[in-house]
Length: 382
Image (tube, rainbow, N blue to C red; front, side, top):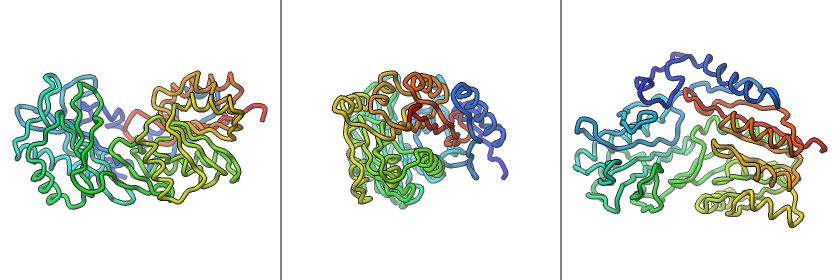
């Protein structure tokens, strides 16, 4: 396989392996995993991608000016210096093309781009999401104010140039924040969401929904998680940090019943709709803090056979680990995107009587210095 070269690797900072060899990259990631998890368990070989390019189904760009010309790109790592990007080797090619078209339309319609320092301006970000199985495409246009000049003509022209777009959403983010999306959405075209198929299940994805950015590798990751859970069809499973219900619904195909817990109310709404669309009767969702809810369950004498968690990069907390132990699962399936916080959390689980049995690394982020790993923990006295 001929390696694609990234012209932005030296400035962008997103791809720490941007100039390297893919096989060497996999070896480096396995070494990183093994070094962190050595006190707890062995790590199997990394599961890499056959074609590790253009895999990101979620693409974000910032609008700004470089030498007075409107451009779209990303901030140079650790700075607010905008790096114009036209064709990224890890982003979906259609999404990249749409971003370039929108940038050209901003110039053509003479729309004022947002200035981060002054907090003034209109066009701020663009977010493109694509269903890799369905090929549905969502474009989210983010403005820094509640104004969108030439909105209808802008959308008409964008649709003419890219008929593959299935929905366009206008998001308003008028806060001085590092978050891309604000809380207000207005659907300008289509349904306001897209759908994708993962592990045979259909999922609804809204602008702010968490959905794995690499759908092909996500299927591999989830299948490994289900295999480690050793489900027989009778188990009660808790999916903490459940998001829109992806891993929980995959587990529900093999489990007795599944409870998904998620703090984000919009994500829970999407999760319930996903379960309904897939006609799954054995999974339910609650909008709550997972630590608090599992503590409440334990106080009522409720137990689980398996707990699945996929926390953010910061990992979990001692309080969460205590709450997991309180519902007394036989197995814990921990999906992590940060080996360092995973190792810390495995130490906490060990003190609660759970021993890591093994881990598998899945390369969800080729060329990027992140790695996904799924780890199985077994209760020592089970």
